[in-house]
Length: 89
Image (cartoon, rainbow, N blue to C red; front, side, top):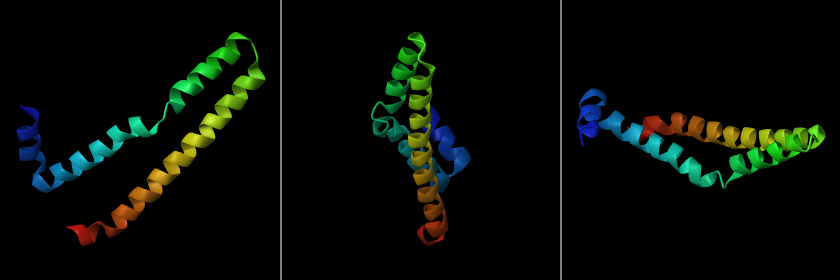
């Protein structure tokens, strides 16, 4: 109740809208995670508990590759959005 008027008065209507869109996008990331972070934690901890360091390394590297690819897709998307943002304003 108090946060929205404060943000609108300090950011302005246009920047508040952008802030809201970006916040919503990153909030939806939790939905698109599909449990990858939790699964990685589970299998790494299972491998470390069994002292199977090779399996822990495999799971870690696989998770790293998946998250780097997701991050690259996000960077490309936002770079494209930034290039065309002049047409939206």
